[in-house]
Image 1 (cartoon, rainbow, N blue to C red):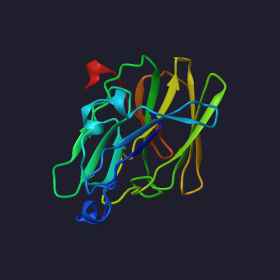
Image 2 (cartoon, rainbow, N blue to C red; image 1 turned 45 degrees about the vertical axis):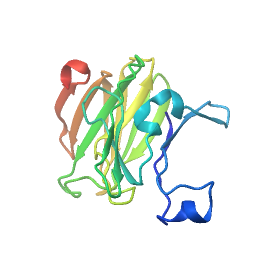
Image 3 (cartoon, helix red, strand yellow; image 1 turned 120 degrees about the horizontal axis):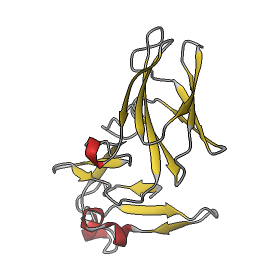
Length: 192
């Protein structure tokens, strides 16, 4: 899926004023159809998506190191909801963790471009992106059905640029500023 909405109304008494609104709301999940339109896939995604909560923030990351993105939803007045992605699409991916030396250690502000099979994606290491939530600092790149060799270019906040070529899909790469790859691990169900 491509868009997740986790919400809840701000007024606990809203149902008394408007019968069409609720305090607790289900999450909504949309899939990009690739033609400028999105499809609501909430009903097919399972009970956790449809459960009514007071969603106030989301953190995204591959929490189980199986190559897909999972989500933790921060709920007001309740425990968090873990949306573990075990859909098994068969697609490939890579995770990139940047470690700064001259730049800040968390590499906040580093831009990473991944190119595979002629297609490029760009992500930036960011601190915070949702209310009271911090997503994984490792960057996830979905590669689709291609398991072709991957090129990774890192533009560090210090101004240094590094390019690494012929990397295999379905791996986590830890890239340290000015040193290149310092660790690599396979992703997959056996790695979790």
